[in-house]
Length: 501
Ligand SMILES: *C1O[C@H](CO)[C@@H](O)[C@H](O)[C@H]1NC(C)=O
Ligand SMILES: *[C@@H]1O[C@H](CO)[C@@H](O)[C@H](O)[C@H]1NC(C)=O
Image (cartoon, rainbow, N blue to C red; front, side):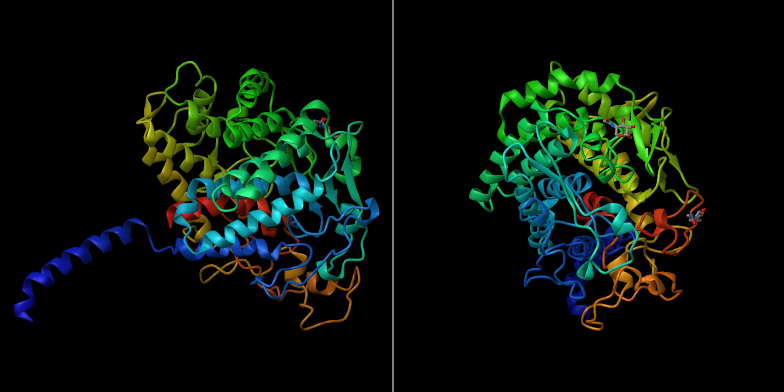
């Protein structure tokens, strides 16, 4: 042993360094969480499942979607715990999955393949939804009929009405968000599948033109299909600018940049309203602080900042607004407007609060990287924010979600020792076809909904709406805003987890 002294001391130095690194990154297995966060999307799949499907309790479903309008609308994602395909949040989900891969795909290793599959499951479907020029299918499934039943997607006998937009009945917000999803995904596939990438970009341009040339809101055009579920309260200008910003990034075409530049100020001057449980709520943080399926403002500013930081003629208002976002979030900032629970979780008004924690964490990390690349700090009053401050804040949110919280539980299903067992999700609560091949009708699922037993099938990787602002959590299917997972909570988290991995 003595003779190996030199080698040993090198080894122990290495060990000490490794242990220090481990202590800094706490005890969370971000790689495991990343794998699961992507797996979740397989549980939300609609349509004919591919042989690569890993979440085996799910089977083919909704194989006739679109036949009422003579289109093939098979595929896509169920948005949450129900079986409706709401294209507005589905498109935002796809955009965020694509942005996650654009920023952090190089850290995903073996998970990258699955992330690409998750994006393509969205884009293949949106190519179907936009196949006919000047028509955009905005939603499939009648939400009233769907929400009346507690049914497996595989059994659905509710109305699968398809809602579509035309030049006379337009929907600029859904159409422009689909354009954003297609454009962002075309960047993802550029080096992987050139032909597919080109198809996506061409379609993105067409759909953007439709959104821009025929302006209107889909909640007027498809009525009860959208409202009060995913009404667009915030207007469609943010989606048009967001779509143009992604098209500019994907194509480098100056026209899209001009569109962004000439419209951004109108966006900032209008007041921000948000959809909170189907009600209109005036935002307290200003437009720069909002980011989600209805409001794209903060995302636009961060996305555009990458190209204009330290460029005095172009950085206004994007960089100052993104700085304002940062100062509205950082706990020690004098202009903070977000609130934090005692346990440290970020809160904004509304339901499914973890959507804010995941999407704002994503923006924090992305912006921190742009700041690093430009040697930049943000001044919040007399407080200086460094990139590491942004990253630490995002990390505190990730760690809270994975278990560093007063209840010591993870809010990701299947991650850690303790996690939500009774999530509000139809498929997850009902026996799989393998166990119960008989058709189960609209109300046959009620006893499973009402049961005090855990869900039968694990929707691995699903992040639920999350705790209340006193850090309490009711693990109950009745508590929808706490126990329901959604695709747009998970999508930005995929990028965040890849970064911390
Ligand atoms: C969408 O519909 C709601 C409810 O009718 C309405 O308050 C809102 O202003 C509409 N949004 C747009 C952008 O027209
Ligand atoms: C959900 O649970 C929280 C406690 O964490 C409670 O404050 C809230 O009222 C519950 N909501 C419903 C709809 O039961």
